[in-house]
Length: 332
Ligand code: NAD
Ligand code: UFG
Image 1 (tube, protein in one colour):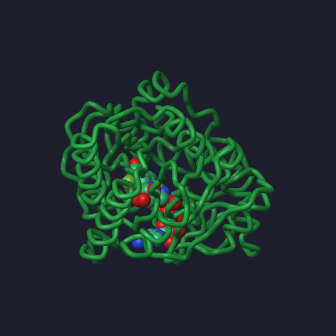
Image 2: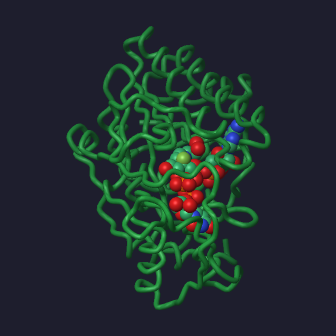
Image 3: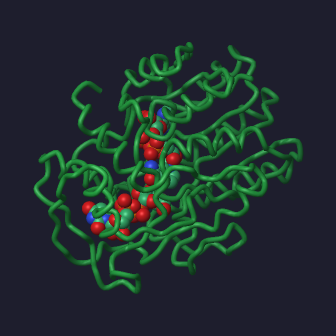
């Protein structure tokens, strides 16, 4: 089967490309490289020993997308391409709404035109807003605190309406929790530009000495130790979740949480990182970060029941693999 992977040179996309190739899928990657490097294609080929066709295109451009669809007989699309920095989305909302929503519409429209019936979409646990944990797919969505989150909720709605009108269109809306870690060989991983917003890359950069200490955003949340609780999932488990979703697509639009179902606090993650790697991570407690929720973790029973998929790697493996990648980063 030929699968178009948009955003396939990015963090989650590159790991999913590896998992797809290992599962026997043929892939075509489309990315405009606004937040990734073309070297990711070489690394994917190196890891899998398989060929990857790459197009440097912007998937909001209908003409480029249609040209790609006309060149390949596609069986499905996994749509990762998107802008993802929550804070930046508050500052430049038009870029986020335009990029993330138009890309979804352009790709869905091309699927209709070229008879492509399988679509997998990268959504986010952020659409649950401040619901009560664990988050279940049947919950009503609460407003998110930022335009990025709204683009995910809106894209889900658009794809759901398209699937309603075209019953043969099969859509999986995958709500990711907190992907961390890297491929065990240290060749691909998360390499954010500038100072990281997310916890794990911040921790690895402190461990490397690039940043002096971690700032823990608040220790007065109603959680076990007062720090924020998240459902960290190894990016390879998440990648395998995409293969499982693709293998088990069914008609209509269906939502699935991809997480581990376990919550880990900021201080627990720091301790796990120190234990896994034998490196101390200095930190200080500072004020809460605006927009953060206290706890965010998944009910993962639906993906288990329908895909037979569960996350296998634990928090120690996540910390070890994240650190291995950071150490190798200069060669990336
Ligand atoms: P990433 O930035 O590493 O990858 C996204 C890729 O999309 C990049 O390679 C970028 O160059 C590309 N891209 C962006 N806009 C494009 C466009 N218009 N045309 C072509 N390429 C474009 O991010 P990631 O962490 O791998 O995230 C992948 C997807 O998963 C995103 O949609 C993101 O919103 C979603 N997601 C990520 C997280 C997370 O914590 N990383 C959590 C939930 C959801
Ligand atoms: N945190 C710190 N210090 C930091 C960075 C983060 O204490 O320097 C804390 C946060 O307050 C939070 C936890 O670590 O309690 C995790 O924060 P991240 O920024 O790593 O992740 P978020 O849960 O805020 O958001 C991430 C992605 C979103 C996605 C969401 C899905 O950034 O895009 O997971 O759950 F929508």
